[in-house]
Amino acid sequence: MKIRSIALAALAPLALAATATAQPVGALGGAFSEQAAFVASFHGKSGSTCKPVPCAKKWVAGHYEVRMEHVTIPAVYRKEWCEAHYRYDYDACGHVVKVLVTPGHFVRVVVSPERVECRQVRVWVPGHFA
Image (cartoon, one colour):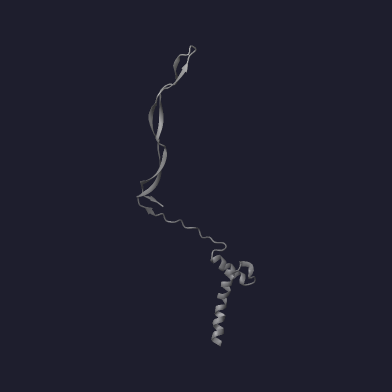
């Protein structure tokens, strides 16, 4: 019995320290508030003077990457000749007269419209620190 009570007495401050970290610093009050403040400052909760350490940069070797590139392909046209358009009419004397309505001309006809294609392009990325 005596051994158990000594062991429990030795573990009591550790139990209080564990509860001090779980509760706010001023919540315990009295003599235990100083112990709680020490534990809180030790764990970085208040008054921490530690500064963040910058990460060490690592070298990434040069390599090829495959990227998607949007390419606009222009439309393809061809020229077609349109014949002149005539109309037959009568003059004041009743004779048949050939009248030009529209002269002959070229027309641009779309063979294939403009479009955008996605192509895979292999690009060299030089080495760098990341």
